[in-house]
Amino acid sequence: MTTVQSETTHREKHVAHPAFKADEQFAAHLQQLLVDLTDLALQGKQAHWNVVGPNFRDMHLQLDEIVDAAREFGDDIAERMRATYVVPDGSAARVAKDTTLPPFPTGEVAVSEVVDRISASLYAVVGTARRIHDEVDAADPTTADMLHEITERLEQLAWFVDAENRTAGHSVPASIIA
Image (cartoon, rainbow, N blue to C red; front, side, top):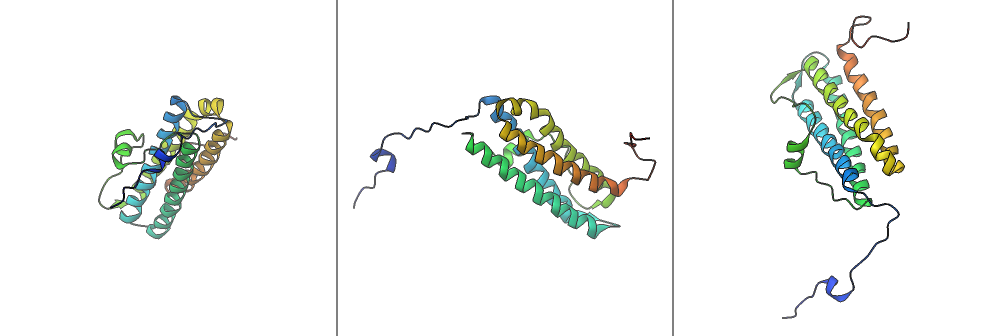
């Protein structure tokens, strides 16, 4: 029987010299955004499977758009974390412990309630992205560009969803243009 030695015993310790390496605050900001995006994807699927009522099919399909966006952005953030020497944690335990999103119910949920809850969750993720933006931008403008893209798309999706429950001329927020 031959003994296989690990690769690390045959070479010296690897040392990288990145142009940018995250500090603790930067890492914590991206970790929070990753948690919130992961929870948004989970909530979107929970809603997708359990939404009922008028406009079911439209909402069912729209929820898949939200889930796809949350998953793609979550993957982008996790990969950016790795590129800046941060180890992401997308475990269920971490997401459950640290999410800033309001909880989503189990069981069947009416379309109008899904609209309100998913809109709130979309805006919660946007709130995280906006809250961390300036400090992320100061540390690394490249990563801040990612936050711009996430904010722009999630606000658009929130508008699409929220419009389902709005009443023309009578819903808050009202237009600021006279």
